[in-house]
Each structure stands twice: as structure tokens, then as C-alpha cells.
Length: 313
Image (tube, rainbow, N blue to C red; front, side, top):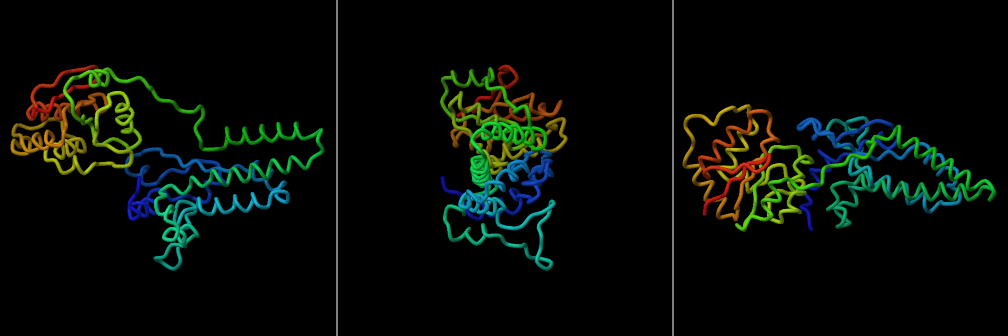
């Protein structure tokens, strides 16, 4: 799938910047915009570890090519501009310090589609690991097995206690919701709209997971905070505004023209069901949303922790 280079560039500069310290300094480095806007802990894990670096240095003379490859991958992992200690380093007052990734961005087509350059750290870690192995291979044969075991324990302990990667590895509940099983069996074809919209991007990915089971189209993508198809619909735009404000009631006067226009547009776009996950709203905040949807679509049906609304055609 092709990605818009302009979108990729904005993402690189304001979202996926990589702190040089994150490769060498224990501690957590967050994606700054997600932390500031949604308090979402998207941790960038690129820690190389001093144990691996020391072992690679010991074997560097036997693996110059791999060290060079690791260095190249690391430089690319830094992204287009130099970012250190939570801020961009500047030339003068208004210019970022460019890095090789920026020079290759317009020259190598594949790089103009890469919005997460820090993933090049995998290449850096691979090169360092092979250099470390070559260093162990220089030892007398009777020591090599013990040295390899000690190196593995050293690096494993460092990654366990100093790396920002969470431990134990987080898991999620992979069982479908009751309403998802109900949707999968419902005879009425068409897409499903899950609410609320205004969740953290990673939290809302549950809707994509549920789609695997019910098999219906949904309007969400993994990196689209507010899909245009919802922002431009009068009904769903109203619901999104209600989600983002401390509204406890839909009010005495509802905008009937917007509700009717939005209902017709949902039907024209192929929406068959609107599913309101009541437990994903702050306490009491789901009530005005349910009131508006009942006025626009008719009474809903409670299925587990969700309320299902059928979109009339």
C-alpha cells in the first residue's frame, strides 16, 4: 500500500522522532505528541545495551563489514533530523540539523514511505550481535561455550532490567465480544460503526481486532484519529463533539435536520449497524450519545456491554 510522502514527512518530524539517547540510556522515551495529547504511553524501544556494544567492540576487527552495516542502520534509524534529549538540535534559530535519512528521502522511493525509521535499529542490533559472536569465536575453543552463555546472560539481564521494553510481555484478551459474535451472525449485510471514536489510537485498534471476527467493513484505520467519513457526516460529527465535551444530556432540542441528513448519509455509505460500547465511555457520558442515536435511528438493542442500533434504509 502506498503512503502519502507529505503525511510521512509530517509524521517523522512531529510524531516518530527518535531521541539519540534512547539507544544508549536506560529509561522510557515516549512518542511526544501521543503523550501530550492522549496521555498514551507509546514507548519507543531502541535500546541497544552496553553489554552488546562492548561485546561487538571486542569482535570488531573480525567483523568490519557487519560493524559498518550496523553503523549505517543506526544512522538511518535516527530519522531525518538530529533529536537529542527531548528536542531538536538547531542550526541558528530555525533550522534542524539534517541527517543522511533526509538526503535519501527523495532519492530512494522506498524511504519516502517509511514513517518509523527507528525500526532500522533491528539491522544495527543484528550487525552488533554478529560482531559479538565473531569476538567470542576468537577465544580458545574450550572457553567459547562459557563465554557465549555469559554474554547471553549479561545481555538478557540488561534488557530485562534496564531496557524500556515492558516485562512481562503485555497481552490482550483475544476473545470476541458477545456483540461481535451477534454481528457475525446477523443476517443484515453492511458495515458497522463502533463508538466511541475519540479513543487513543492504540486503544481503538480493538475495533480492528473485532473486525477479524465479525467480517464487516468498518470506517477505521490504524493511524487515522478521526476518519473523514465520520467528521463530514452531520450525525457522527455531532456524536464526536459530544464525546469530546463533558456533556451529560443531549438537551431538550435536538438538531433534527442534522440527524436525518446524517442517518441518510450513513445508509448511503453502506452502514448497517452502529455499535455503542457503553463501557468505553467515562461514567455517564454514554447516555447523551444513546439519546441522540435513539432519536436518529430508533431504539437500540442491548447485547452484552454494547447497544446495537440498526441504520434504517
